[in-house]
Length: 196
Image (cartoon, rainbow, N blue to C red; front, side, top):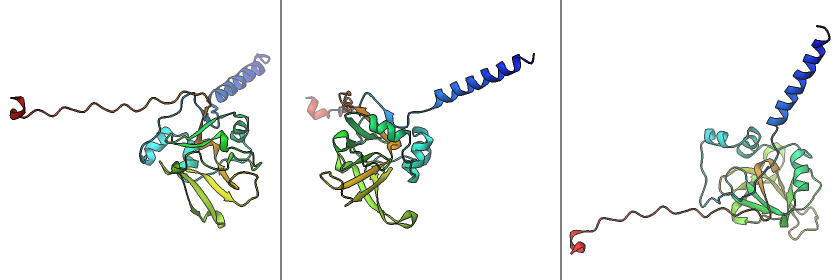
């Protein structure tokens, strides 16, 4: 009986680690197909956001959080090849690998958005400093901050320091989304005069 106890403990620990491994999410979502692009503002209640975002995505996107520097998402970002980065909350295109560069800051960095109309900035006075916050223009989600004049050898001398957890990566060559199908228009009943 004594010899079975250590074996039981070892099997229990192994099963627990397997379960934890299954639940472990990739820090940055990767998809083979580009998400449907929002055509207007995306508005949801906080409860709706909580249903579609992971707890970490919600904390960062909806509560202006920050992921840990030099974490798994940064390692994943550095290993990604050519492709496009979308807002994980609403699917808006934000950046591509063409604007990606390694600033060695510990977070994904881009020197410019690929779709400028999908990215907005505003002054951020939190944390006792003045910074420029970067948000998704479609859903208002917090993405990170942009810094200017740091001397990087990029076309814009800007560093969009972005939380990778709130991005969705689609590798180059991924399928484009099907265009939204418009609902058929209902025919208006013809007037008696038109029927003759």
